[in-house]
Length: 289
Image (cartoon, rainbow, N blue to C red; front, top):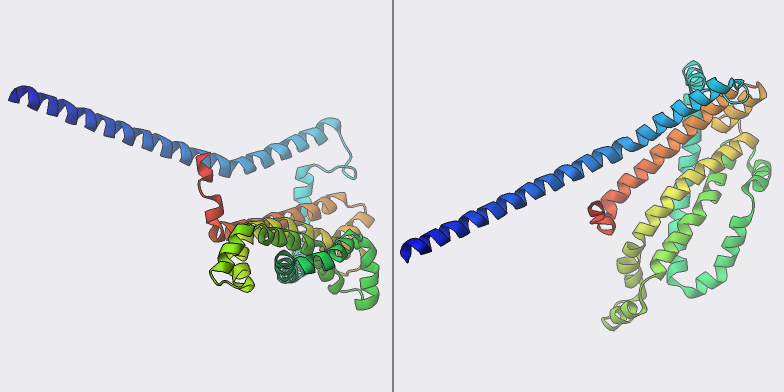
């Protein structure tokens, strides 16, 4: 009996060791799959961009499209190299005006979003005016800004602010307004004031909405500043594109568009990095899908 018991124990230990080794193998394979997926996700945007540029180049060369109608990517690249100094100077001006307007939009949008989300009275009283203000075409406002402030960077800053503040207000207000009534009642029963509920529960709840609005706002902020630069400015990417189009230098116009897109992607990436470090709790477990 003792020999049979020892043999059964040895068999059981061997089976347990085999199961443990199998689990380790599966975990290692899963880790490798996740690593490969992350590498593929990191490379996928670049592969798509390269493929898009190759198709664009092939399309233009095959059909023999004129340069002043649709330049090829290689022609645009040559224009970027040729006019790199004016592009950098004007891009710096556009980035500065957009950043200033966007910074004001963050501060004002956050404050107004908190006010709208935490007070039904403020929401019902002021929100229709905000919607009407956002519905006004910003191109129609730029001439008025020029009359008030002149031909300089201020109209571009104000336009970037006006066009980017609305998404921030709406998303922050939505995040704060989604606090459950039951949770509010429990917190009030425990002695929490309205300010405590907004600051300690509402703002953390609104952070994913806030960063989502930043990603939208930063892209439209560039639209606002460049639109103002095309109408009333002596510098900036918008001004450069207007000058280039007046000379029928279409490759330089596309070069300005590409530089603007690069700046927008860079600002979007910065917002995403900050979001990942701030609201990681909101996206936990995403890699499991």
